[in-house]
Image 1: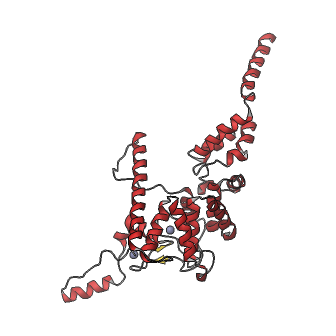
Image 2 (image 1 turned 90 degrees about the horizontal axis):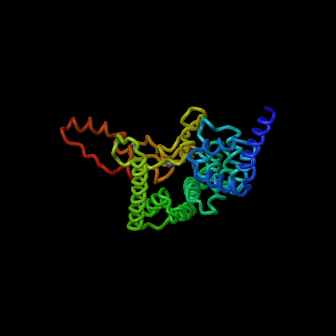
Image 3 (image 1 turned 135 degrees about the vertical axis):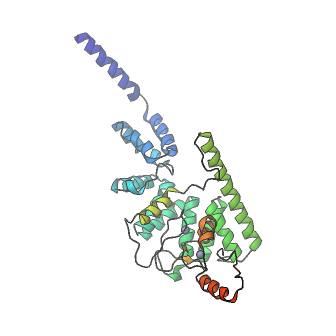
Length: 327
Ligand SMILES: [Zn+2]
Ligand SMILES: [Zn+2]
């Protein structure tokens, strides 16, 4: 009996050694792959809970620097001091996705605009396209400052850099700026060209996600092209202000585009729909997207009803310009 126990203990010891014998470098390189490709934070974090060694190596800067957008996709329900600390660890490891996500959260949710903007700048310097675009929206609106802090030329420059890297939101914004001559000399045909390019890229990524859904054998009840995926940090912002957890200060409104989530940082910061005056947008891009997605059918000029009643009296038809919501 004693002998058997000893043998079992030895076998167990050998099994342990199998993992213990693996070199740190190898485990780190496997964890790097995992952190960059995990589809949710829990996919990565559960591995860290397995044992002390995996925990230690999983928090190694080489691993955290590689954490991808989905690994860092903290949701509102999971937001805590620990998740904030985890993002900070990733920032310190030089992770630009974490710089962008924490920058947005600090800038808009935690009202720490200086720290938020400097985190986004850290990512932007390393050519992180969403961070460049986010900074351009801040420049266009003078967010965190007053109306006189708006810097249209800086906004266009940041937006152009992001568009050059292929970021669709920036391509669309720049297209509208060129069409309107906003912060840049007007060039209608170049603006149109960029808008077509943005739509083509959007369609391509929608088709890709449609095909991958099909490949995954998911049941598709709706055969229309799926809507573009919302970045986790935009969803976080939307939940933060939409859940009632935080009340926006008196007079401040959120961007009406569903995929955005940005709030105003001072009253009347965002542009309003000039026709109905009921919706507000942080950018021309958000306005164009929302017009296409839903506002086109909701937008009714305030004085239209009055006009209709008056016209009925005269027995004449009312002319409605179809396109006036899109500017
Ligand atoms: Zn917006
Ligand atoms: Zn409207």
